[in-house]
Image (cartoon, rainbow, N blue to C red; front, top):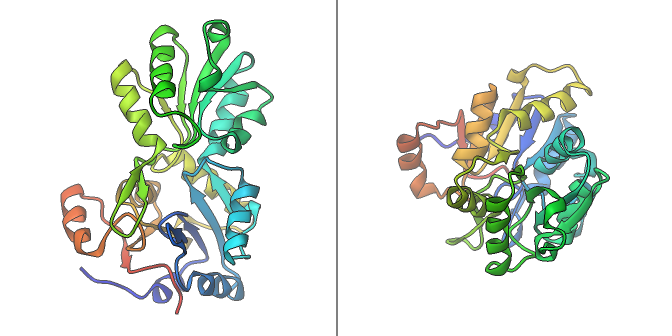
Length: 282
């Protein structure tokens, strides 16, 4: 398993798509040295975007979290969230009624901007259930894991409404050696219980990469071969990038641990173009 220096890889591309959690930041704050990477990208006039399954906050709020951590190069227009795709679906397909959601109030930004009446699942009851048009899985926080998940299950059993997963991640790093279940994992469990297929937005879905690709090409003319996808998870970042035709980098600063990488690559058949310990330009 060859491990490359990130600078030696990224210098060959004109634009970079970064995953967020596990690549730029983790449970402990920013990945050490990651600000150097963005100084380098700006100096070399390379485009960059954060392509994330994080639908917990608006792009502006997500950008502010980086600013608060000391990374000021990232602005709202650099962030492409799976929540944006969920919003597009609601704009096109859901025109009235209540949009019930699982997640904190901040995560409802995407569905609130569609002009629909939004409601946390905790507020759904026998008096308003008939008016619920869709259920959206946004984030793993902001609800009671017992009563609200049970309510979501029974809502979907009783009503043939669409269910949208705005973050397909099954887990995220909680400490150096532990992960926590993400909303995609919760949704997968409920999907199995109710025996239905939910609508997914986020990596590894090609729609997520096409959305980002269209945005970067609106700024500069690029081919897919000019773009590098950097991620810490084989089944989302690397698989999605590979399927879309991008070169990919797997890093060890998040979900994938170095001593497990070769076994996981061999067992899954998901092969990154490059492997780097992190996305830091030294």
